[in-house]
Each structure stands twice: as C-alpha cells, then as structure tokens.
Image (cartoon, rainbow, N blue to C red; front, top):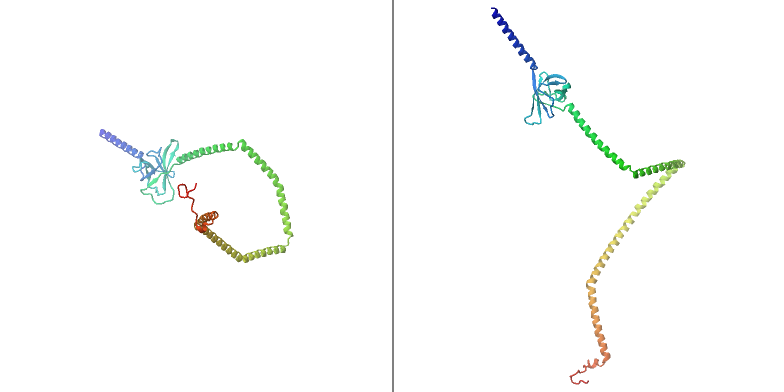
Length: 320
C-alpha cells in the first residue's frame, strides 16, 4: 500500500510539474488577449526593427510585431505584420512610425491617428511615415548642403568685392565721395534760395486780388475759345487750299507724264526723220555746188548741154 501511495504522489507531482511548465511556456509565449492582425507598408528602411518588437498606440502598448517581409509584387515595399489588441479600433486615418527604444537602439512601431478619416480600417494597410530621426538626418543634410552653397556664394562675393575694390576703383570711389561732398555743400545755398523764391511767390500771390485772378483766368478762357473759333472758321479755307494743292499736284503729274510721252515720241519718230531730212539736204547741197561749179566753168552748157571731154591718147582728134 505504501508503495502505491508513493507512486501516486510521484505521478501527481510530475503531472503538476508538467502542467506548471506548460502554463509557464504559454504565459511566456506572448499576450493572450484577442488580437487583430494588420499590415504596415514601409518605403523606408526598417533597420533595428525585429519580430516581437513592441507596438504602441499613442505611447500605450497594444501589441507586438509579427513577420517582416518584402512585398512580392514590389520588392521596394516592406510589409510589417503587427498584432494589435482587438479592443483598439484603428481607422483609415491611422499611420505608423518607427521610434527608437532607449539606449539599446532597438526600434518599435508607434501608431497614431491623424483624425482625418474615422472609417474603420478593417483589412486595410497602415502606411509607415518617415521617422523623426530620419527627418532630422535629412534636414541636417539639407542644412549642410545649403551651408556649403552659402559658403561658395560668400567666396564668390568676396572675390567680386576684391576685384571691385582695386586701386583704380578705389580712386573712383574717393572722387565720387568728394563730388558728393561738394554737391552737398552747394545744395545748402540752393535750398535757401529756393525757399526765398517760394516765399516771394507766396507774397506775390497774396497781393493778387482774387477777383483779378478770376478775371485773368476768364480772359485766358475767352482767348482759348476765340482761338478755337478762329481755327474752326479757317478750317474750310484750309480744306479748299489742301484740295487746290492736290489738284496742282495732279496737274504736275499729268504734265510730267505728257512730257515723258512727248520725249519718247521725239526720240522714236521725230529725230530719225529729221536726221534723214538733214542727210537729203546735205546731198542736195552737194549737187547744187557741183551745178554752180559747172555753170562757172561753162555757162553755155545750160543751152548746149554738158561739153564733151577732150579725147585722150589714141582717140580721134587727140592733140598732144
């Protein structure tokens, strides 16, 4: 009987120990609350984030990180699986950020809600925004780049100033300052003179009676009206004169055209005929000269005709 009692006690102890071990492993295995699985999509590196990392909603622990993998459709996208307490209602305005945990450098997921869309998230994906540290690093890079650019601009500005402030330009600046100083000295008397002139004009205007000023303005107005009336009266005469000048211009153009046509006619018809007549007169003059010479030598040729020429050698009646 005692052996059976010891065996029963030993078996019961072993059973309780196994139950305690199972309960311990179960307890250490994670939260046992009802959880909902979500996916966080990241376009940024997730360095320092490991599975089982804490998930916090506005600073409160609400879950753990599950599997971390690449999107099979787009490898540039990182899919972070998270298990969140089902009592936490996430909306479409929820977004995630990576935050650093203390001095260890390990990262965890920080959830927050923008409040722009109150629709429940359901099976939707949560976008991961750039972390504050990354934004700070990027801002630092931009500041460094702008500082370098500013330094380059300052260097170019100093070189330009050195080029401008050479000896020749320095002398020009000194002369300019001297001229400005002389001008400022001469400006004082000029201003005093202008003030005196202004005072005199004021006194003169004060001495003029308002009625006289009004009469003067009225006379000026009447003179302007008279000039306008005179101009209106002279307008018809000016119009007729302009028409006459246009008529004279047309007559001159017509005379010029007739002269051109007459010149063409003289060149093409009259001059050739005159030239032909001159040639004929020249020939007739030659014939008349020959006739006069003949009459002078033998006047009887008018009655008896032209005398026969003397016989030459070998002809009948030739006399040597």
